[in-house]
Image 1 (tube, rainbow, N blue to C red):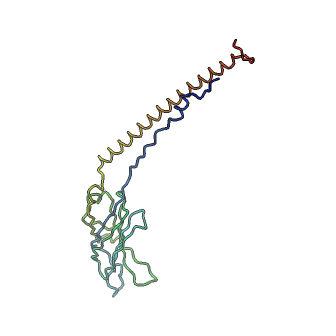
Image 2 (cartoon, one colour; image 1 turned 120 degrees about the vertical axis):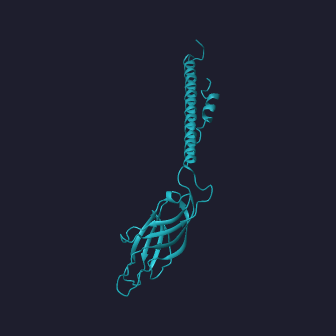
Image 3 (cartoon, rainbow, N blue to C red; image 1 turned 180 degrees about the vertical axis):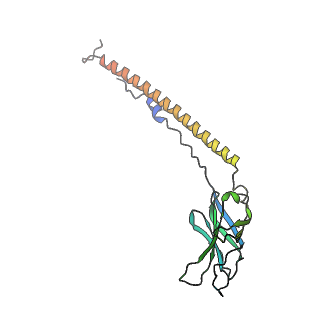
Length: 219
């Protein structure tokens, strides 16, 4: 009796599914430099007679990433501090937004620093073209019109991707995934056909064996 494992079996076992296409679409990381220039119109938290004006510092942070912060020096006795502080974030992603908290430093260890106000800057306002201007400060005195001046240089060439380019990249990746799935379906179909042919040969061999008498003579 011939073995059912013929040449077709080796062909069937040698077929391997195509590798999956890896698609990576999302924010990219790069360094970001932020210059905290100055502020104006801040409220005076040191309202007690003879206490002077606020001692102001600013904390810049990435929203949702509390470990990524940078603090200016403290400008004493002023409501219009000028820092020109250079902050740099090494692992900035192009969807991250910035938060600036303006604080009044309290010389007493028994009292927390006063919060003078907060300014927010969404990524769409500075990435990738940069930003040079003033941001309104909220939570400050309603009549103060407090503002924070910030400068962010434009992103280096090639670090940003336009909407058109991003859409083109996504469509290309989707096309590659669809092509890979179609090839995989074709290979699975071929494997099923090969298995069916092998099963037919095995069935034929079984019938041949059943037709042979036990004494070995042919009918």
